[in-house]
Structures are given as structure tokens and as C-alpha cells.
Length: 166
Image (cartoon, rainbow, N blue to C red):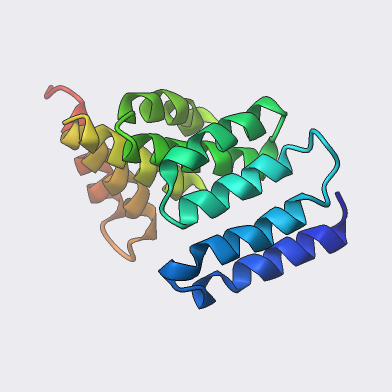
């Protein structure tokens, strides 16, 4: 894969909002055409196809493609995106417990700009399982550092939702 391909896929995604729902297949065709240019076995192909299916409302078709991309070795930033998006897709198709198992290790992984997305998706999975206090704790913990004030208070409240009282 080269920089030119990355620019083209980025440009294609920049046009996503120009496709109304009834033309979702047209957008997926654009992505499929770009994916067809990748070498066989590239994890970027199933990842981009999964993103296109997911973004057009088909979590059921996206989930196996995310799994394929990860099995092919998708790693780093895109690998983390794939795990976040797969967990969201799993929740959407009634498999939230799998989403929790997939994302929980990400809480202890290297920190990056996707940390809040990890916590938000994990919170949604937890909520789908009736574990709302744990989900709320994650969301408050993620929001606390962004607050201009009350960071310590919000972080403490987040912990108190899931830790037993002293």
C-alpha cells in the first residue's frame, strides 16, 4: 500500500456525507474499487470494506470483515479503530458481551486520541448488558480531563460509581 492509495481512500471517505441513504451502495462501490487495488492479504481491504458497511447501517456485514482485518494483522492505530468499531457493531447485532471482552484490554493499552472512543463504545456495550453504573463511570472518567474545572471531583465520582464504599 502506498501514500497515494491512502490519500485516495481518505478523499473517498471525505465524500461520504454526499451520499444519501438510498445511494449507500454507490459509496460502498467506491470503497470496493479502491480496495481492489490492494495486494491480496492486505488487512486494509477488509477494514475499509467493514467501515463502509458499518457506516451505511450494516453492522452484521461489517463485523466479520473487521475480524478478518484483525486476523490478517491490522495493527496500530487502524487496529485499535477496528476493535472499537467491531465492538460497536457487535453491540448493534446483540453481542455486547463480545464487545466488552474485545475493548476491556484497550483500557490498559497505550494511550492515544482514541481513548475516549474506547470508553464511549465500552460504556454503550456495558449499558446494553444492564451494567449502566460501570458505563457511566467510564464516560465520566473520560470527560473529567476535558472539563475546565471539577476534574478531580468528576474523576472521584466516576470511581465511586464502581468501587465499594469505604
